[in-house]
Image (tube, rainbow, N blue to C red; front, side):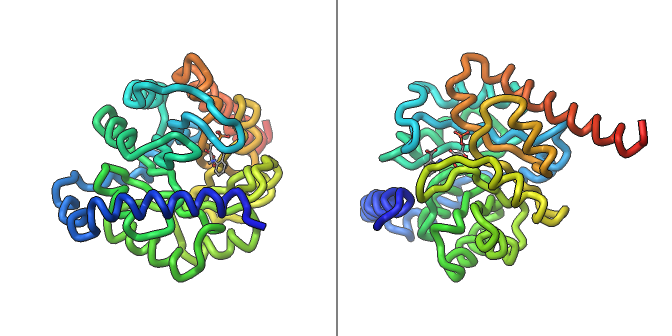
Length: 275
Ligand SMILES: O=C(O)c1ccccc1NCC(=O)[C@H](O)[C@H](O)COP(=O)(O)O
């Protein structure tokens, strides 16, 4: 029985086939020289106050349908940057998330913040495409890739100067992700095969991520209390979509996430000092 993820990937492959026919890989690669070098998101993520917020431009989703119109993704991205987001995730998948590479272009033109191309990467063409459109990071979903392709895409991203966010949902996937020694490992509370969201997936797996890798809690952040719970479990970053695109004041919401994380860290420091 095909899963939700299988259905998404089969649409992604069809759309990719059309783009590749319109712009063959050689022509795409020749555009790499016209793009500014990729930004390194890690200094900003590691030094973020409280928690690094990766704020997502997300119009719709398979689980929730339409979330927000977002006629000007560049404007939304500016408010994310003003709120203190350490990186911005732009969903480029078209069929289920109503995103596009044009959104990535618009956001790139609007902000200097590091950008994640959030899509279902199954082919090296997409990684090149991400860089050509100004992305600094790519998402690699372990559940969507065999080990060989996972490593190839990871190596390719590194060669292009990009950072990978390697996403997992269970302990076996986490072992496969850690074998790549990526800068960022995301634990998604959402099971991409069933769409069920369970924050315990995040709080169970984050403590298994070594300290030199930043653990990113993905999905299911509705408010500051969720951020606090994820930070207590070891999250160095949170990736948030729905709560920000549906909030009329994303800057304030991001600030509240950062403040909640800072309180957790202050309490931990006080506890360690025996106060
Ligand atoms: O969001 C979905 O419904 C979804 C379904 C299938 C595959 C991926 C999906 N979302 C991608 C994400 O993981 C989220 O966009 C991201 O973590 C932010 O989640 P949220 O804050 O809950 O919008």
